[in-house]
Image (cartoon, rainbow, N blue to C red; front, side, top):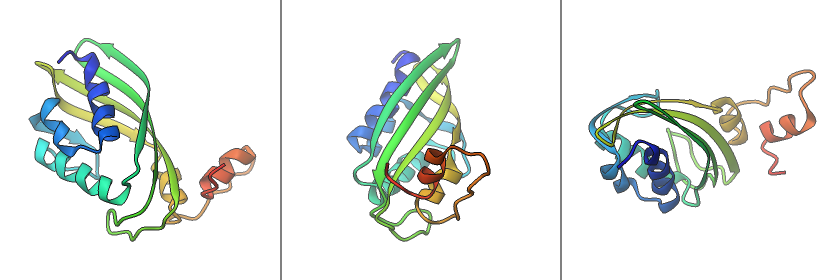
Length: 151
């Protein structure tokens, strides 16, 4: 697998709702710099299994892919409905939209290390788990998304 396809393989895993797809692009000794997911392929597989139980209608759009040397960067948009428990939180039935910037270090066609930046504050606000921030001067659309409005 070429480096450029790691981001595509991740999008395919997400849209196929197939945690076992990690076998095709995540190294066994995968290092994950994400506080919600442990290191290793098996921990990654287990996390995505829990994600799909919580968000069974997940759809992911791969917005951009950049490749530089042994690094692959993907920009993603996730849309789903919270229909099952995740991270100890009961389902809210709310629709969510999450964005991420993911960076993978690739060796021999497999992702061996991962970093990401997520809009977690907005994500947890959409679920009703954090109060809306209502920052002065923020555009009205930004406030309504934080408040969980699907528009």
